[in-house]
Image (tube, rainbow, N blue to C red; front, side, top):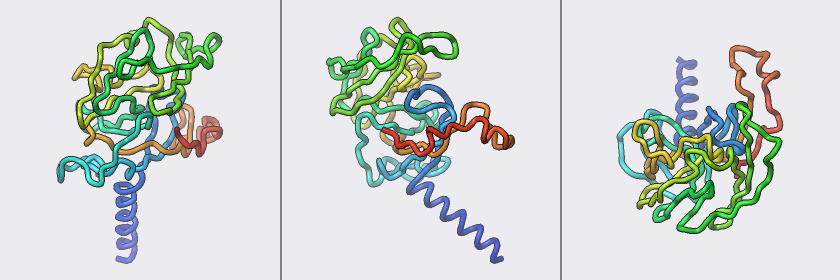
Length: 238
């Protein structure tokens, strides 16, 4: 019985910490490069925006809205539940706040009718796995937050969009890897993201704890060392 009691209380403490304080999250794709890479293992703070039913595993419908709600800030990297199914965890950067008008025009982000200032960092000799050139830029968002983004240059599907008006209680999310991200620019109810309700926010991405390149496996100890990316360990996220 003592063993069972110890296991029970250990699980209870772990559950409380996961619901109230922190949640681990593994990056599954390249949509947030260069900020986050596939295989990064990050920690999300649950208290940053308060709590909704989605703070609890399996999102039990025990209450609506948010408790101890705090407004997220433009530029935060946010984990949220995908609106079209309310169950899949997604991670993107918050670009549009309630009341904002967001639009892409000729590959330039516009917020409330004004282009976001960007500065080219790299370009010519950097390519992705398909041989497409990658351009990296620093964007300065309204409010002064500076972020690094990348894309494949002009002429891609999401480089020109209609104006998206963000209603109260919703947010507009975009991936930092602009031409390799399904985000709020895609409103198709079958495969898009659309506007994200406040209730769907889980927390703010704070730090990369560990990182492995794709192909690392828990069941293959050799890959723990051959696939490790130590330069990304304990990286605080902007």
